[in-house]
Length: 159
Image (cartoon, rainbow, N blue to C red; front, side, top):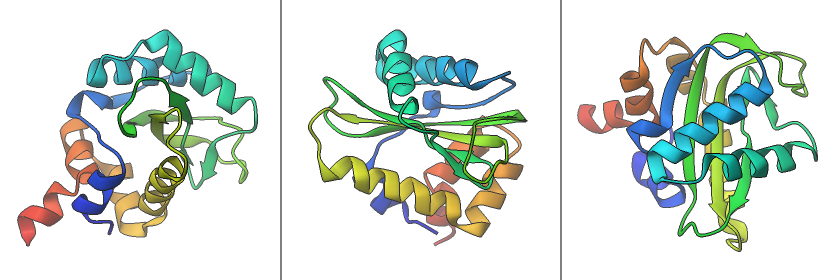
């Protein structure tokens, strides 16, 4: 699994940015991500949604295996920040593999961060591809468990 220190070096998250929700479609997911980023970092949810939708118009951020990684640049950030929504019911996201998504990682990066954004995306991608982590996130019973898994608190405590 990806270690906490490696992830924390690439992006930050907060408990307020993690949720388990029942949402109907992609616009509702983007709106929920906007609210998570607003709660976690005080960002303007309307701008978050606008940025995510603008990026999504270039092509689906549906990663595959039930995972989506909507991402965008956001003015004024000092470093990349991430949110996670576990959907209580899968939603079509026009993913490359055609499967609906139930895990949605949102990522916002500073406007001119260059490769930092790509490194943060790659870290989330590795996290989503890790079989054990994917299974644990998919079966997490609540938001607290999701946050603990995302920050690898369980691995740190076991060491």
